[in-house]
Length: 96
Image 1 (tube, rainbow, N blue to C red):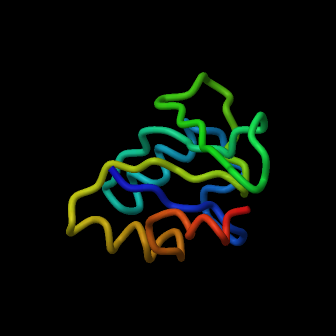
Image 2: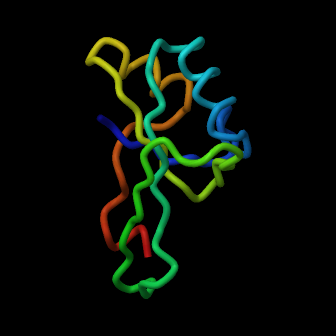
């Protein structure tokens, strides 16, 4: 599983989870598994992420979130090109 940040412009940002999952699968063959968001209960100096696998219907993908994707090594490159970003979270000092 890989994580990709949702930054504008991004083809999945602001879509609901089900629509984003269908679009990602059609465009790349990857499976959208969940979403990771910064936990609002933590300080910006010490952020933590809350990961929700298969979130409830109607969940919107916010531009500040990360998507959790299941993809093979071959498909990873397709996902990176489609989303316009490499996988992974930024170093801690950049995410605060």
